[in-house]
Image (tube, rainbow, N blue to C red):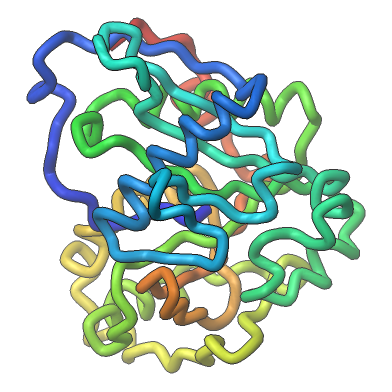
Length: 270
């Protein structure tokens, strides 16, 4: 999912105009580049990430999976700027993953169990918001559109990597420990970190964790956990992106009726 868990405390209320949101699927290269420009702002300029296909001159954060993915775009139609995209989600279906050669996070996690489950899978990635739109309803508008797509495609399991900023595992010990103590995926869905960046993280004893403090700076992870999300085994330290990644897995069957109403109900603009 590549979602950063400690964004700056900018709020929509600080934006000059009341936002009016519209969500659509990218239809052409201009739409995709608008998503990539926002990703560059967040993942490269703000958080210090990089990658082999990042275009620093054009300020586009891009990779080889973009050509195969569905890109959800959140626009604020009140922005006077030409580039009105203020939020994005990248979605990769199983068919798209085959065309791309693999799912994005297969470089970090062994997805054998998920792929053998015969469940319909959708990988979420590169989710981010413009700094001016964090803390308000912008993400809920993206989630509503995501819920519509999931229903239309009859998806059984959502998954992807969620990222903590930084690679200091001692600093991240409390939130990571809490995830592995309380939210570890069941055996049939338990993916495993792999590769050079994989760390078989040893959780702190449960009694040493301040649960509230541990999850204070993880709003997006908390939101997924609240609706039934679980995590895979181990973490992946991604030095190129300056992140520590966990694999989040959300079977749609775990989302209660009430929770579905919360995350897929119609939202008023702003």
